[in-house]
Image (cartoon, rainbow, N blue to C red; front, side):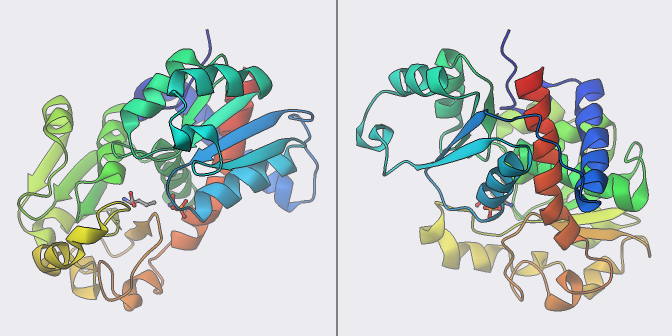
Length: 300
Ligand code: CP
Ligand code: NVA
C-alpha cells in the first residue's frame, strides 16, 4: 500500500523517529561532501496554492541533492486552478512522478488527492496541519537537547495548523504540551477533543511557559487570514514571546518558530535573534528531514 504523510499520525513513532535519526545522519554526510543519489531519475511534483520560501526551497534542493528532479506547479499554472477535478489531477500527475507534495488551503483536498494518487502524497501545509514542519522541529530539539520524551513544550499564540500538529506530536512522542491562546483562537474542537488528555491549556502565557524546555510560537495571522490582521493583532497583544516571557521558562530553554516571523509582533527581536533561538537550524533542518522523508516514502 502507498504510504502518505498527510497527518503527523499517519506514521508510527518508530518510523517517525527513524526518519529523524536518518535525517541527522544525512545532514552530516551532506556537510562532509558525500553524494547520495538514491533518488536518481525520480521526480517529485510540488503543487502550491499558497506562498512558500522554506518548503519550496527545501524540497527542491532536497530532490536535487538526492539525484532526482522536482516540478514546481503553482495552482494558477496548472489546470487544477481552472477547475480540473482533484481526482483527475491526482490520477494523471501521480502516473508520471514518484511522489507528490501539496500545499493547499483545504486539508480535505489533500486527502482527496491522496485517495486517487498511485504515489506517496505529502502534506506541505494545510489549514489543519503542517507535519513536515514538526518533523524538522523534533529533529532540531533532538540535536540541541536530546530526547523530547517527558519534556515540557510551551505553545504561545494562535491555535493554528502548526499548533494542532504539535498536539498530534505530543501524543506520539510523549511530551508535555502547554498551550496558551487568546479566547476564540484555540485549536479546533476536533483537535481539543482528541488530544485533551495530552495537552494543558492556560489563559496566561507566563503560566504556560513556566519551567518549559522549549517555547514555540507562530505568526498571529496565517496565510489566507490577512483580512483579520488588525483584529488578530489586538487579540494577541499579550501573547508576544519576549525576554520577560522566556524568563519564565527554564534557563536553557530553546525558542522555535517555523518562520516567516514578524519581529515586534509575535516575537521580540531580542528573543528570535538571541542565544536561546534555534530558528535557523530549525529552518535548515526542513531540508534534511524531508530528504529523509522522501527516501522513506519513495524507496519504502
Ligand atoms: N515554515 C514554512 O513552512 O515556511 P514557508 O511558508 O516559507 O514554506
Ligand atoms: N500558520 C502559518 C504557518 C506558515 C508556515 C500559516 O499557515 O500561514
